[in-house]
Image (cartoon, rainbow, N blue to C red; front, side, top):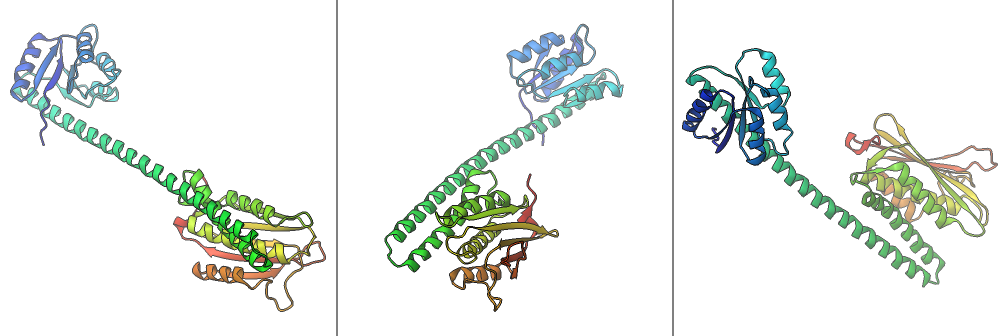
Length: 359
């Protein structure tokens, strides 16, 4: 495809060559302006928007390379074709390194202008493609910015809605006289808060596909400590997690499981009024498996080997384990305390696109 753009500046100290260039290039569809030296050509380029500039190498006072450097320093320099009167490759290489888009070896005869016009056509076509690419990239960046703003707005509204639901549940629980019903609503509130923790991290970071598990579980541990501690029995919940980023859906599942196990330990592991510690741990096992574990130093497992708590929380953990094709394990924890404690763990296999190191 040949592209003819209207205005070409031809810089050459040879008056005869300038006249020949004007006539030959004019016949090929170009509107040609002429400059007798580099300084004049740079001044003309400052005052007029040219579609392309051709620069001769051998010129007294300011040669083509110096002229090229001056042109390239202009705010909007058009494409430049470098014209040499020598076949020395070092000159062409120097011009290309200095920013020339192409070069043509000057000769006497019509063939030179045919080559020059061909070079102009190719350079202008590349310039047009480059402008089109830049415009497309600018449009894509603008579109991405709009989508990011929309996503942040959606996440912000979801966070507000989750907070509103939690407030409704809290108000409702205060109006109930049945302790069992009140506890059920309080657990529901904590489950919503576990999901809200993930949403808050998506909203406040630039990564909406992955959750930094060390930050997430640390925040979850703090919330659970505040929820389960009271004036007579403190529950110290801590988190120790490798610096891993896990896909959002898997992170939510692990957070929900951790919430249920910690809540279970805070309720059953230690006698009322006695302080106790619960530990959340997340470690990588091999290349694609992560293990979540929750430990306490409390009363230990029942004699039948079944973990305490067989209500909705247990069923929720079993459902999440089935969904993610994982196995739940319970085992005693031998510590320095008289009580054996309990360790609950689950290992989840992740695909390559669901797990990544931070960075």
